[in-house]
Length: 294
Picture 1: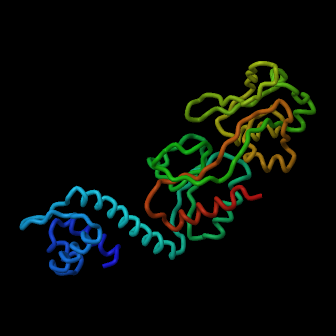
Picture 2: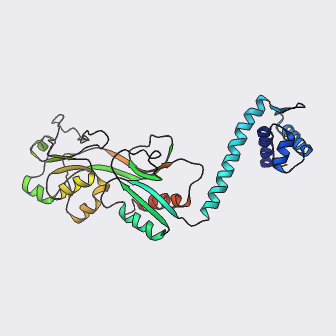
């Protein structure tokens, strides 16, 4: 008897509580099941089952061994399901949660749609903290380190915060050299959707002490901040991945000073499960390969 067959036989004996019932599930006689169980115990050097005329009961060693056997069988079944699903072409609906951003995620999303036309993307753009499982999302893209143990995660890439303004704004108002210089500038702030609080600018100390930049406007989406800054309405503090298009076009430029220090990661998050539908696997692999590709 090979190891996997022995594990399956023992699990059935434990579940059914009798050799006859276990044999019925396995297509074996009660005698064959009993002999198989005896060989397994002999190989392990431990008694797994207390035998009686009425019902079988697990020993302490049997209970410990069963817990591991069930995990092995579950993993084997999950691997088979995933392999079988992987052979099928990705299809069906995929609900995806995305942050408001500009220029990073749209190209790989369009490429995914061309590559997998049978997958219907339901794209939900929001900067709020969504309940991935409760709101029925298949996968979301979010910044910050994953904290929900119910979710699996895959890193898309890293980012840094930058101070940005339009060339026109800087030509009219000048470029700040220190943190204190920001007090005479128009500053555009990001307001956290879930709390309403302003996200602090991570200004590095430069001898001016702690400075609170003035609030000329606040928005609860990064997309709005980008649009206002690009139109010369002030200075904004934004993740660099959200302004790739504007920096390339020259509608926004990065300020050399004052300096800011904050970095983070962008992740794909999805409900953890033993097996993954082909459409979700394809989406995760595609976005991880292409989202931060230059």
